[in-house]
Image (cartoon, rainbow, N blue to C red; front, side, top):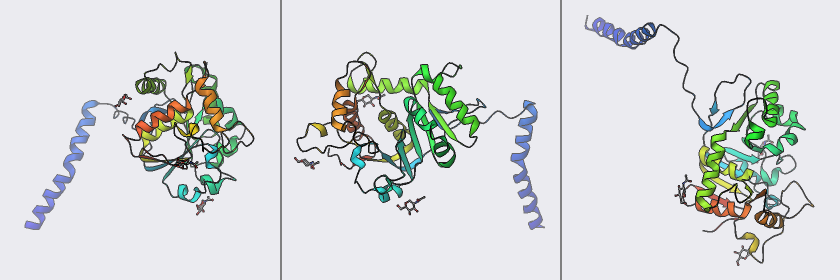
Length: 287
Ligand SMILES: *[C@@H]1O[C@H](CO)[C@@H](O)[C@H](O)[C@H]1NC(C)=O
Ligand SMILES: *[C@@H]1O[C@H](CO)[C@@H](O)[C@H](O)[C@H]1NC(C)=O
Ligand SMILES: *[C@@H]1O[C@H](CO)[C@@H](O)[C@H](O)[C@H]1NC(C)=O
């Protein structure tokens, strides 16, 4: 008898939440509200459906692999392969460079200017690289969603053609936020000083949003090029015989209009490294 009693109580308890839920639905007299979209609100999925979806990705450990020529001969491919999330930039390849840069890409952050390079090799990027999430950034004129954003339109076509592809755009608000961060850190207005933020800057911001700890590979610090013994390497590991990294950085740092302030940005990362779990390897940074 006692046993039966407990059983009845059990049933009652189990069905109570169901009853409450049912009552709730009946009272509303309509469908349940859409589930609140979760994820990082600075990065919005590009889908034909136009439903708001944010980048829902979190990694305990990330490798942020720079495209710098410093990666040539670094021999850290296996070390990078062991890290949960591997972040790369633009069209930086892994094939042929596995020993130095690893063989997986979890997230690729891509500049609007590099979109044609990816489209040229679209089967590789959007069909064969099924494990990669893409995050595109660009100025409003190229990324606007009213039909007049040339690059956004291209990406929307890709999203329609490859339904499984995961492509996101950095939102206009997030880009404005990045400008405010630059101004806060340097005291200079990004636009008024004729500078463009680099893909590296947006990638660092994304890594901070997405990763608990970040291992940065192949990035030089802001003083590297002024040291007498610095090594001369290509600007990109996959483009030999081009202008070397330090010359490229110096030209950009002093260009009046449209330059990337690579050196200033590195000084900013050094400050972030004091507030976030972040380390720098090949070359390593000392603080
Ligand atoms: C990637 O490299 C690791 C060793 O670093 C190896 O174990 C793995 O099989 C490789 N994966 C692919 C897809 O080549
Ligand atoms: C602005 O800069 C200060 C000092 O570097 C820092 O503590 C603060 O978090 C920054 N705020 C933003 C929004 O970047
Ligand atoms: C350059 O010299 C400094 C010491 O002055 C040393 O710490 C650094 O590793 C050297 N860099 C290279 C690339 O050899």
